[in-house]
Length: 188
Image (cartoon, rainbow, N blue to C red; front, side):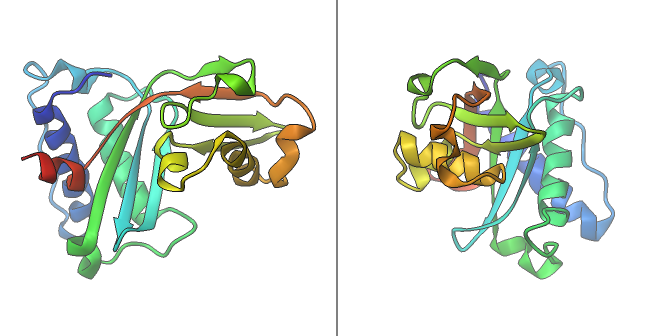
């Protein structure tokens, strides 16, 4: 999905305001949907929170029936409060938290492991009633090759790391438009 710099900044501000509203009770201002019709489009999105460059929460939706703006706001609150791997973000942490947003394309089936492009494709594994997802930036950030990426998606889904070698798994891929407060601050 194509987003202008202004639209990315608005979404990042909306995510931060959504998290802040947990503590202040203030509502989140609605954007100008006529000026930015992309905010009404339906797309999956994930919000990743880091503190001191370490994961602090990550929640999102592969697909969403809500407008993108609402999806991002909801994912931000859930990443801050409901990621089961972490305790909820406290008000004192807000200034230390950095926000990254990933706006997802529609998932598409991958027929072969050879189709996976590191840094381009996120992965969704659905197998035996389990599901795991890794965003496209994960293998880049962790210096993974394709085999390590497949190991990681298997582990994320609750299987042993080499499970993908046993058979061709039901994998879907997706691309993402990824932007963060850190990356856009450097641009300005």
